[in-house]
Image (cartoon, rainbow, N blue to C red; front, side, top):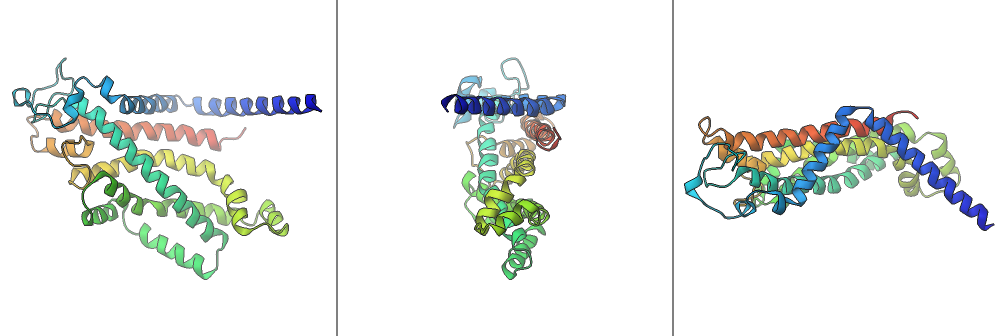
Length: 297
């Protein structure tokens, strides 16, 4: 008996390793996805170890050196310095922290909310409460996310946390609509009907039978959304509704540098390029995740 159980465990582990290998093969077929993965891992590494990899970590705080103000890119300051004499590269490294935190926290909030709303709306399609919550979702979808986030953030005190809340309010309907459509297409499948005939609780059917079949598209959308959520957060910072000085934020750095264009172009151009790099990295990674989760065996 023991040998049979041990054999089953070994077979299960071998099957798991085989699935991982096949998934990695599908992901790695697209070289740009590997580039995206490397870029994302590099950004995460820099964000975590910013105090150790930044050339001038003290410049991320209330630091002023007017003698070094507006210096162009050089070996000492690869991205140049800003109007306060602070090293832009060091501040960009620290800004990665709040940028990634913005994306992670917003997705942690909106994915469960949006997925639950979509599941309920799709599974109970035709019921009055399903119609109500989906019409509310449509109202939110009718308003551009950035416009809604700006309106909400303008009513709150400008902080990173409040900007996260503002973006979250504008983002959950996209997951609700995605899961709603997929739930409608799955709720009449034989495995769902079999669970209903067995008397399984409806919410258990939704979360244990239907939702697992949505994980691929949800994870793909999360990866692709990460960059766009960060861009929306940077937009709030650009207009002064996000992190406040002296905390480094990519949007704030672009806004501050815009005052000195075109003479001191590097003050805003390099932080803007880093926003582009983040979006590109997560988009490339998202393409690989989509291929990995949706391709056939």
